[in-house]
Length: 169
Image (cartoon, rainbow, N blue to C red; front, side, top):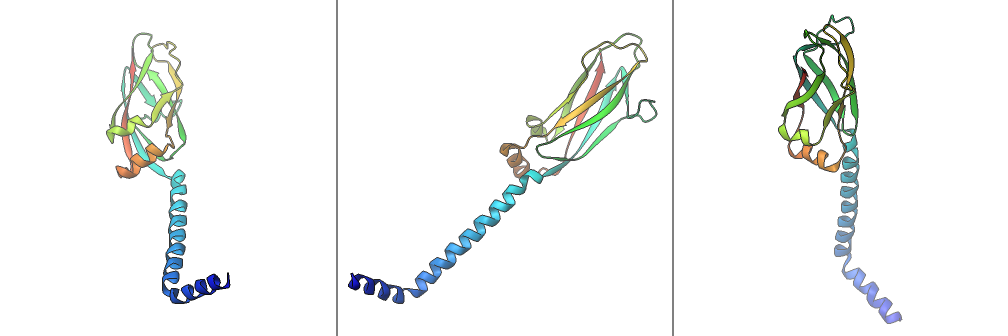
């Protein structure tokens, strides 16, 4: 057994440079892996600025209940990946008939981003009279899925936009 131990010590003495190189590579690998893990764990703090253009037919949209500030553009500001943002609008009928309204979102830019996020509202389809104003809340939901984060990085998405159509029927 002593012979094996002496052989091992002799091997270590002859291989100092090789062992030192292996140790340096191992330490560097651990440091790089740790750094990458830390950076990737921060992807939940990713934000994306956005803008929505409001287009209407048969209605008008406002920021306030008194209908003093017309809404033509919505700056959603920066939205955190994995979050939702609510926005309240006041919609006034400019039709001569009782109406319901529909929400459509078009012209997403970049186009494929619409596969990942959604715009919804709390309007329940009730009729409203000519000149009547109702309050609705729009909700923009942004996922935190790995595929969405990968899409943002791969496509180098720095912002996005879309058109919001609110149409009387």
